[in-house]
Image 1 (tube, protein in one colour):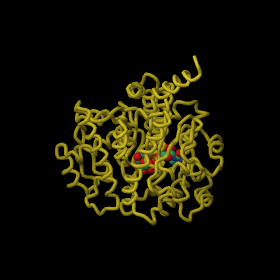
Image 2 (tube, rainbow, N blue to C red):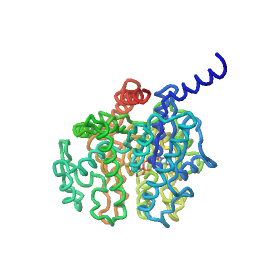
Image 3 (spheres, rainbow, N blue to C red):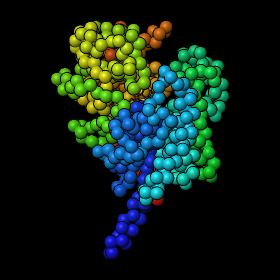
Image 4 (cartoon, protein in one colour):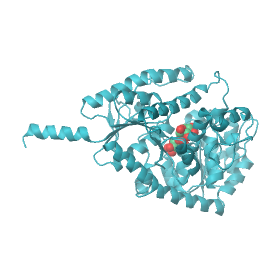
Length: 490
Ligand SMILES: O=c1ccn([C@@H]2O[C@H](COP(=O)(O)OP(=O)(O)O[C@H]3O[C@H](CO)[C@@H](O)[C@H](O)[C@H]3O)[C@@H](O)[C@H]2O)c(=O)[nH]1
C-alpha cells in the first residue's frame, strides 16, 4: 500500500476509534472518581482514547508545567478547560457564587475549544461524560453533536432525593421544607420502604433562603437535573440522558428502582476504583493528587503493625477539623491505646504540629499531611476508618472491607453514613456534641469498639466481596459499563 494511502487509512481508523472526554469539577473528590472512570474506560475499550478535562489550576497542581495537553503513565490524556481562575481560586478573596458563574461562562467557552481542537487534530470526541456541578457541559457537547452522559459521583440515594425534591414527587419537597429545622424528623422518600430522618438527607435540602452561602450548590444540582430533562425531550423515548452512577445494584436497589420508574436512565457502574483492577502492590491513585504527601514512610510504618489493628482517620479533601475536634481525637486515640494513622492536611490543622499530636496521643500513631488512601485502606494492618463519609471514602472502605466510624459533616455525607450504618451494617454513625458537632473522645472509643466487633467486621467482609463482584468481569456494573462503551463505539 502506498505510504499516503496507508496514512489515510490510519487517520480514518484513528478518527473512528471511540474517544471519551471525561469532564470534572476541579476538586479532589471529583477528580478521583473521574480518573478511576477514565482508567476503566481505557481498559474496557481496546483502541479507545480517553481525555480528562478539569480546570487549568487543578491540572497544573497535578502536572506542574502542563500547557495544552499531558498524557499520564496510564495513557489518560489531560486537556484542561479554564474556570476563569487559572492561578487558583482564593476563597478568602472571592465568593463561591462568583466562581460558579465564571466557571459556567469561561468553562463552556474553553471546553468548546478543547472539543474543537481534538476534532481538528483528527481525534474527534465520540462521547462526553461529566461529573456533578457542571450542567453546562451537556450544552457544549450538544453543540458539537456529541452525546453526553452525567457521571453521578455520589450515592444513587442522593440523586433520588434531589430528583424527588425538585420534582415535588408525592409532596416530598413540602415535607422536607416543613421538617428542615429538625434533624430527627422523619420524611418519606418516594420509593423507599422506610422513612429517613432529616439528618440522613443531603444537608443542602435544608437551605431555605437564596442568601444562604451555599444556595448556589442547590441551584447547581437543580440545573444538573434540568439538563437531563433537556436531553429527555430530545431523546423522544421518554427517558433521560444516561446517568452513570458510581454505585452498584446490590448496594442501592430502592434508589435505582425509583429513579428508573420516574424515567431517569440510571446505570450503576460502581464501585469505579481502578486500584481494585490491579495487583495490590501496584495499586495506586497517584498522579492526581492536589495535595502533597510528606514522605514520612507511612506504608513502611503500616507494614510493622499487627493485622487489622490500625485506626485510619481522615476527613477527606475539604472538611476541616476544629481545634477541639483535633484535641478530642487525640485524647480518644491515646485512651484507646490503638495505633492510628491520621491525615491532617496543612490547611486543616491550624497551628497544631503533627509530631506533638502523636506524642500527646501516647506516641502510638502517625500524623501525615496526605496519603495514598487506596493503598492505606488496602493494607492488611488497617482495621477501622474514622471518616467524614465522603462518597469516595465510603466506596473505598466498602470495597476494601474496612469498617467505618462515620462523622458526616455536610452535603451527601449524612446519607452516606445512613447507607453504611442502616443499609449495609459496615459501620456506625457517631453521636456528636449538639453545640459544635464535635465527636468527643469517649464516643470515638465506643464507636471504634463497635466498628471492630466481629459482627461489623463480618458485614464489611461480605460487602467487600459484593462490591468487587459487581465491578469484576461479568458483574452487574462491569456489564453495564460494557454496554455503555459498546454504544459509544457505534
Ligand atoms: O490523604 C488522603 C485523603 C483522601 N484521599 C482521597 O481523596 C478522595 C476524597 O474524596 P471523598 O472521600 O469523597 O471526600 P471529599 O474530598 O470531601 O469529597 C467531596 O466530593 C464527594 C463527591 O462528590 C462527596 O461525596 C463529598 O461529600 C465531598 O466533600 C478519596 O478518593 C480519597 O481516597 C487520598 O488519596 N489521600
